[in-house]
Length: 372
Image (cartoon, rainbow, N blue to C red; front, side):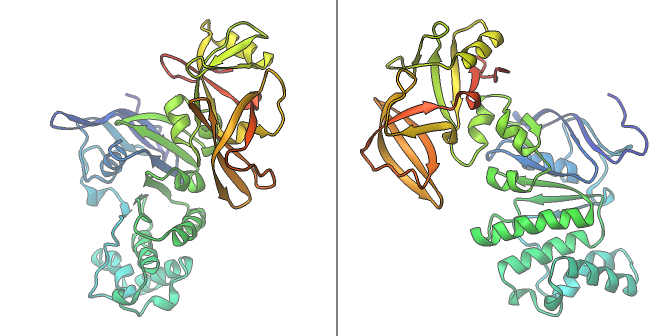
């Protein structure tokens, strides 16, 4: 294993694994967290993201592998010696102290002078817009105010690494969106490395510099949000990332310029020749899995010929200026999103086409994305 260069403040997990008895929570994780970035660990429950965060914090020791904070190896260093601050799902505040006392508590226990504590508390409360709350009791605060105090309490000592474990899960949806915006602003101003853990992909995409997607203890893919959306490494990531589910369509492409059999072969449509050529250059197999995001499923009242599939509007959901359609094609279904100006009725007969330049293709066996 190569030691990070002296002076680098990047955080590295080198072949890190964590076992709980026979259960493998994290498998051979290699991940580098860049200095001062906001990285989101994203995945479903049980994927290993919280265990990974706990190993970064020193709350769990890896079964194998190494953790580096810059040029310092911290694999077996106790939590209190790592210069890490955490915010949890629960607020973890002291009810017998007021807001000012809670924020300054960590500095006080470290023997920081009263003047420095007062200055730092003033700075961080201004940053989080909670100056007017400093003399209030914790019981007098709303949920959103308590979470702001929790963040201030963690950030006031200017930690090397700031960890947030699903901090907004117990807050209502409107306030969650507001606090997401605040986290991005705070991160930009404090310039501290942050790792944010969530199972909510919308939350991850809205705040992250980069997202690390985990599944079953393994790192599936890491990259900027738009990169994960546009270029998922495999079918699982394509289905997991996105506000609406990606349509998964098994396809037998046949010959160039010919008809492709879709789903179970009960449907057929003419494939764009450019798409066919790109797939042919990427794989010898004509049997692939198409990934079509709903915004790239085109719905119209008139057929475009062999490239169109006949469908029926099964259900619709109005999403503000967009409409999400569930389209029935024989015994199969496709999701499509259109502008709300393109309004089709339930049970209306329509035709479906694909925006082929934006259709993804995956190996039918390995489910890896084909680079087309």
